Image (cartoon, rainbow, N blue to C red; front, side):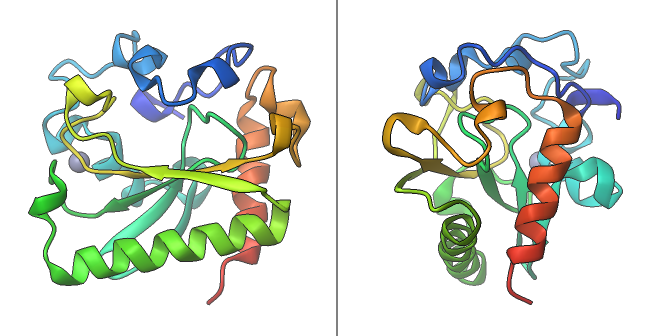
Length: 181
Ligand SMILES: [Zn+2]
């Protein structure tokens, strides 16, 4: 794996502390930041992800207007992002079909995560603009973050330790198998 999506072994010891503090996420200032930044589609991880191989992309599901990808820097295991294919920044930039599919895929993501993990709750949401904490502000993404009581979770090994690439791939495979056709 290479580029902005290539570093999957970040230290996750502060994983729970990072909930909803994405400005602390390492890739914003990380050495793998593309030269032109994330603003242009050519350097945007969410524009590149659908074109990567299934093993590399961590894409869980593809719709006609949006796709679902595992967050490389999860706050919790199973943390998904629902993204439009189009490189648009603002929620008001979405057209009707994109808005509808983003909503329905968010619902499906919740159902799938519940099915495989018995999540107790969720944080859903979008950070709009860098000032609001968006790590990659140029490309809209809806967070779907499963929560457990005390955040003891279905893959506790991921929760407070290093996120190994293989664990992310395993998590992706688990979600792909549970995703409805
Ligand atoms: Zn993009």
